[in-house]
Length: 246
Image 1: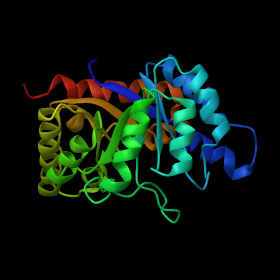
Image 2 (image 1 turned 90 degrees about the vertical axis):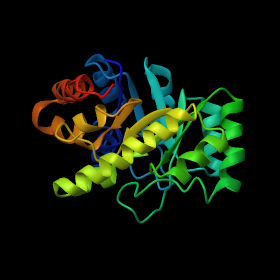
Image 3 (image 1 turned 45 degrees about the vertical axis):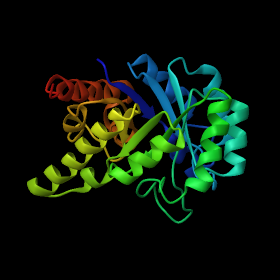
Image 4 (image 1 turned 30 degrees about the horizontal axis):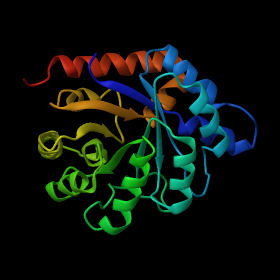
């Protein structure tokens, strides 16, 4: 398998925070995911602390054996926290308090003045920086110019597309974005809204080397258990990868 699967365990913490109990523990979930074959773990530490807490991030940094990817907004407080913690990777994402989940990609082109020093600061302490963006040319070009090492292509529009024509259009946009990013020396990841049903087509896209998937894994785990949910997702990714265009 040449595509890394990073499982996002945010929604284990969502269930915990709903009752204010110490369980279920996202750290325990992360370890189960790795034992089941995940290549890394992703968490999003949000400003409103609606699910993942700073304690979770600190413990995960110590126990995750694969890649530990911290998603966060490009704020002073979060950047300082990341520089102190030094996860393997930081993915910068847009964030609004009123949203249910991250909506759309980061405006790398429009926020250059904010993002450029943040990217430089994170890279300066040895953290790989990824920008969560749409695959349109202007955003990809801006990510490269800002000094990011990776882009994570937002797959939400693809996941929400209905009808063959709409799905094909969104897949082509991801195909074009992945190719443009790769041509500029960027690693290419993808994520948001991916499930066992729709992930094979994304895994089949050339240049995609990492997938970040959370909600679907945790939802499936409620029914079949976390290890089985991870296994099923890996099998779906493998099916897509085997059909990848040369």
